[in-house]
Length: 131
Image 1 (cartoon, rainbow, N blue to C red):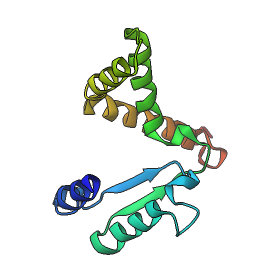
Image 2: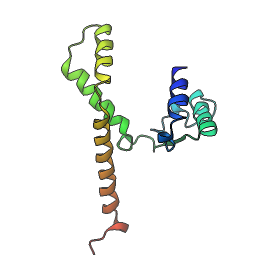
Image 3: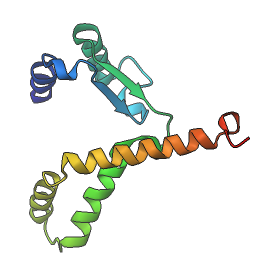
Image 4: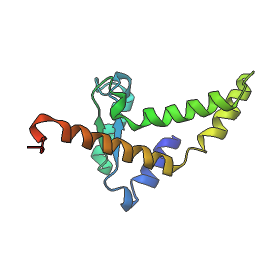
């Protein structure tokens, strides 16, 4: 319910998110394979009623999915800086570190990903401009 409220009221009604796109890694559990999966039904509802779009990358392509890099940062911080002995320690650490992933870090990851895509594009034989 909280996700519904956040998504529909915050994103769906905010003009700056009019071009919002949900990017997923094409894992079948996200509803990319079957219309019966609740997540797929929810995405279809968002698209139909609020104009949201969603895109699924090629399966097994973490280099195309920015969240993989965000998870890497998060896991490194949790594993490197803490000695966790209890489930409560882990939960506190997760909550503490999650809010410390700043939008500027994510923006930098996006820019580096775009640069990598550009390098691939320019290196593709059909786009070789070296003569």
